[in-house]
Amino acid sequence: MKEVHASDINTVDWSYQDENLIATGSNDATVKILDIRKLPSEQTNDASAAQSAVTCTLRGHKAKVQSVKFSPFSSRYLASSGDSLILWDIEAGVRLGNLKPEDDQEEIKQGQCPEDHIILDHIGHIGTVSDFDWNHLSPWTLVSASDDSESFVQIQRNNDCSMQIFRPLDLLTLPEDEALEHIAVASF
Image 1 (cartoon, one colour):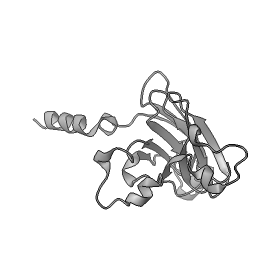
Image 2 (cartoon, rainbow, N blue to C red):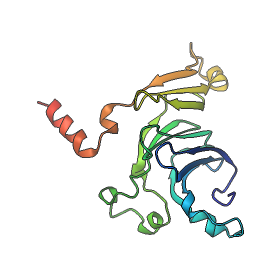
Image 3 (cartoon, one colour):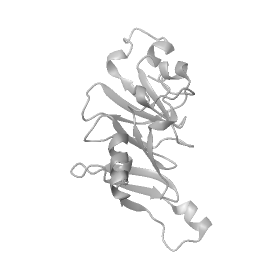
Image 4 (tube, rainbow, N blue to C red):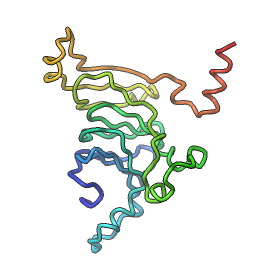
């Protein structure tokens, strides 16, 4: 499966909710979602055949992806870490309501998701986010750890923020129509 990424694969995760989906993260700074039903047989050594299993390529990291993990409550959501911790909606690229006229339709056909699949780019850590996990009992709650040792010396801070527990704002995780309804109600 080395043909799936342009560089080494560092991390993989199987979806808790959909036994056919695997997420991979690589040194090429991308996350890819694979549908195992589309994987080529062992006899096929064709690189394009391996690419046919890729349902979505997620771009948002600026450096290698250290870890990927599907949400425990929906196969639609995924998080990945590296230079930051990014929460993704992997279905955003395939929902027709989110496609814009300026989105490259050819890229979308080839599994290249438009930019609107990023729910949150958590940049609260100073250094590389080395690990994270979803809370399996509290949806949308995550814990993350980072290696701030090199960055810490450079910025002279009093703490190194090596572990954070956080939950994104509820409005970020709601469907757009529900979020707008909440905003309208709150503004009165």
